[in-house]
Length: 623
Image (cartoon, rainbow, N blue to C red; front, top):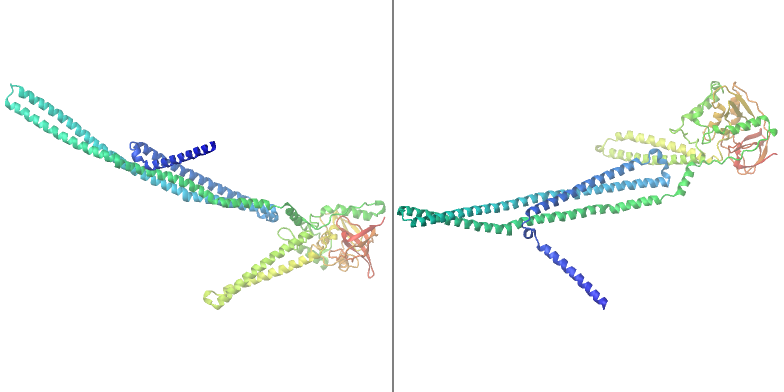
């Protein structure tokens, strides 16, 4: 029962509120400034002026906001520009974190674009509308106030006429009263003649007539004033005030529309901004630390095997030459560059060591070294990237081949376009002269031919690089070095001669040429440089012709034996091939460069000596 009563009361309360709101709406529709505020003309003028000032203030607010939006967008774009990856950082674009940051910059740039859209829309749509409305309202208000002032002036003038007529009537009436009194006294005065009494009578009659005329004028002016005043307060002034009311309502309605319009401008770019935020989140989620780690490995992996443990050298069981040689091999590792080869920039010639001008063979070797140095690229690398580790070399060559292939495809399209143009010109000479295309076509053919030659050359480099074992760097390049002014030159039988040099710390020609003749340099073409290995003996014979020094041959004793675990095709100067399961003598163990010096018995010329990858053999050293 109480619940029903409470629900009934709530329904009645809501019905009452609805009725009150409807009544207030009807009353507001029926109320007008002309009838309700007929005597507040000055206050209405002040109110309308303040309203237009508020509209102008809103326009200034929008202008300041547009300036802020424009400045914000500009600063965002400068921020994106300042943090764009530099050209030297383009190689890092493969990492997911760098790609995510680039995508972030792109999305921030899009955000800046949306802020610019907001700024332009507010400027063109809202601010322009507010300015136009404010100007129109001020003009209409000025006209309304002018009309109201004119009406008030007319009413004031009429009231002045009425007041003047009333004063005239009051004066004429007093004068007539005085004339009547004067006539009555004269008529009763027996001492006055009839003529004088008649004169008083005429004066009285004249004053009475003037009083009647003034009365009529006053009545007439009063009627006019009442009519004008009634018309002024019932029709003319309410019309002006209602116009002011419409003007103020127009301003208020425009204020509402402009505020909503500004919000709509902001809302229109909200979906795009939301997509930008989604893009930023997606860019962040695309970062994969494992993938970046793998790419770091791919970029910097050299393909070399880590050095083995340094063996213990028992000086009591080794001859002095081998001890000196072992000490030299371990102490000269710091002469290698980080890529495991001799730096091409440190390649220097020593005049007179090989009697350069006395042998054509030696001159050819020196010219080959100079050619190798001249074939360096702009970044200091060799043309075939042979100064890089095997893995990096193959990747560089593959990237170069892909670049050349793309250039060939583009140049082929350009050549085909020129050929079509030439055919069209030949068919219709009015379109152009075919000879003007001939030169461009020949130049395109020349470029295309050069690109194909370069592609074939780099394909050859890649094929050669794929055949080189990835054990370590060339044995000759890592063994023949300079140490404390001594030159140790390995010969066909494994002997080593030390030659003192009074010069500066310059690499000698033996070490330099050995490094240049490694598989990475592309100069060495023979498989062996030891006894019975063809070109290696020829080189030594040529060197032996030098009058600067002579070489003595001394055979090294084996320090163990080994068995080949895998077949090996020699492709470096100083290395020898071997087949799987073949047993060889070890005459020099691995010095940390990944190569072991071995010897095999050769029926034709006695012995074959050379280097093989340590990871390809299983060694057993003598006690």
